[in-house]
Amino acid sequence: MKVPVFNLVGEEIKKVELPRVFEVPVRKDLIERLFFYQFTHKLQPKGRYPYAGREMSAEYFGVGLGIARVPRYKNPPLRGMGAMVAMARGGRRPHAPTAEKNIYKRINKKELKLAVASAISSTAKKDLVANRGHVIDNVPFIPVIVEKEFSTISKTSEIREVFRNLGLWDDVERVRNRVKIVGGKASWRGRRRKVGVGPLIVYNEDNGISKAVRNLPGVEAVHVGELTLSHLAPGGHPGRLTVWIEDTLPLLDERFREVILRHVPGGVKV
Image (cartoon, rainbow, N blue to C red; front, side, top):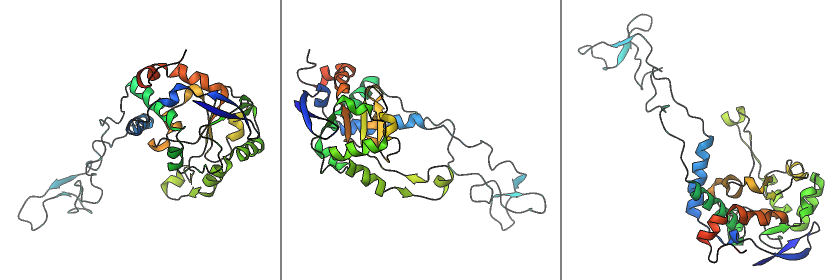
C-alpha cells in the first residue's frame, strides 16, 4: 500500500510503500491487557507494619461486665477505652495491604512484541484514531508521514506552524482547552495539572524535534526504537494520532520482522 509523504508546508511531495507492520491485525484485548501489565512495573511495593495498631497495653476484660467483648486499655486515664480492634480508635486497619502481595505482572516477550506491533498498526486506522477523541477533521491522510526535514525543527513557533499546515494543531488546541486543575493529595504531590493525550511524533534522529514539542501540552516525541504501549496506546486504548518521520519507516519492519512473518500474509518483502 502506497501512502503520501507531506512536506513542512502540508503539500504531498511523493508516495512511499507503507511498512508491512501496519498490516498486523489490531488486537484490542492484547493491547489493553499488556498495557496494564507494563503499568505494574512502575508501581512501588507497599505494605503496612505488621504490628500497626497493636502496640498498646490493652486486654480483654472478660464477660459479666455488661460491656462489649473488645480489648480495652488497662491503665488510667484511658482505662476501659476500646483499642486494637479495627472498629476502635487508633486500632488496626482491616484488610491492610501486605508487603508480600505480588503486583509485578510478568510478560511474555513475543506477546509484548505483538502488542506493540498491533498498536503501531492501529495508528493507521482512521476510525480508531477518531474513536480515541483526536480531532482529525483537517488531517489530509492517516497515517501522517512527513519528510525527514521535520526532525530538524527546534523551535516551538516553527512546529506550531507545521502542525497547522498538516491539520494537527486542532488536536493540540483540544488538549490545551481541557487541562484540568485538581486539588487534594494529588496537588500536594506535584500532580496538580491533568493533561490529556495529543499527537505523538516518532523520529529516528533527534536534531531538535524533542525540544520543539516539549512545551506543547499532550505532544510527545519518541525514538522509533523506544516505542512502547504507553506511547502508542495510552490507557490501553489503541489509535493514537501519530506523526511518522519518513526515515523511521524502514526500521519498523526490521524491529518487528518475526511478528510480520507470523501474523501478516506474505511475510516481509525483500
